[in-house]
Amino acid sequence: MKGFTSARLSCGCRIGFREGTAGSPVTVVVEEKASGCMSALHVRDLPLYDHREALRPSTRLGPLEEEEFEEEN
Image (cartoon, rainbow, N blue to C red):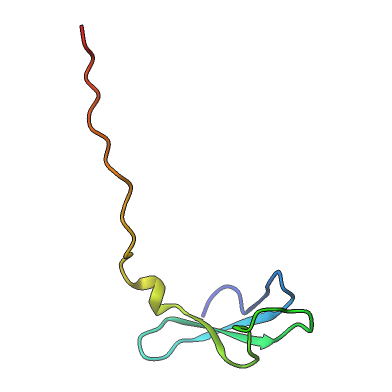
C-alpha cells in the first residue's frame, strides 16, 4: 500500500489503513478509540469502513437535466 498508514479523526480516534480482503483494496480499522468519542460505530480493532461500498455505482438520482434555453424574438 502506498500513502497514509494512519490518521486521526475529529473525534480523537486513530484509524489505520490495511490491505483489504475479498476484493476490497483497503480496509479502515479503528486502532485506538478516544476516551471522549461518542460514536458507537468506533470500536477498537474493528473495520470502520469497507472500501468496496465506494466502488459500487451510486444509487442516488443524478442532477436534473435542464432543457435548452431558447430566445424569443
